[in-house]
Image 1: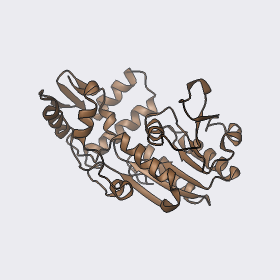
Image 2: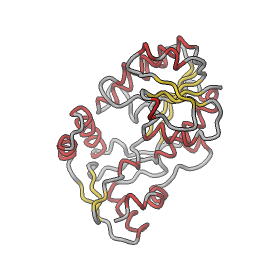
Image 3: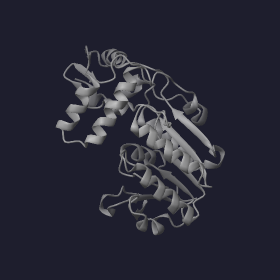
Image 4: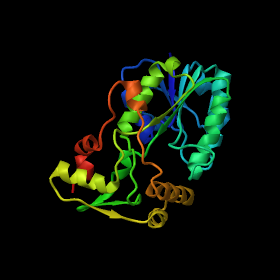
Length: 278
């Protein structure tokens, strides 16, 4: 069984590849072969350019489909699904977004809903994964003895990206039993960033305070840093929703599939002390 990984150099797909270590016949799709991860077969192609995909998808049985966040994401997803149909791919495992729906409070969630529906109507076997807020999003958020964040007092069922990788690898290795399933992946607890700061304090033995910042301030900071305006605006939309409690829940999906609990925030804090500890 050949598995093709898209978004191979990104945070999530890199975690998927690590979790697939030792799995035979893994191929990555990259735009530049010189930047491809080592130890796997490399195919060069671009999801935004369907003419580049036929050879890359040839002989693939299962596709891990991850598209970059942006207004063009449905176009890239559509191209991948069409190339998969032409190539005879049997199963697509699609990385969607938490709360993806036609009435989601973010443009990203509404766009993912369109692609989720398209995949379900494609005639291919499919599985959709919708992960919660990433714990790794907090890397770089501790400055001195303060954790800064734009989610107010909202609680989040945040998940470690390493667990997304483990979950996706489990599905990719045996996709048939996950046919037609949509999974929402969360960590074991829903916590606020104030709770997270308290956990960092306990874990490191150093007082760390939480300083809320407004979603609009986050957007302006992102623009000042040169990030695209669409990404900054959608981030503001997510932070506004999270501040209102939109992400305050957990699900049993991760443990149901993997047979173990997801990593706690304390686990994440211990393992990422080099990036988080003051």
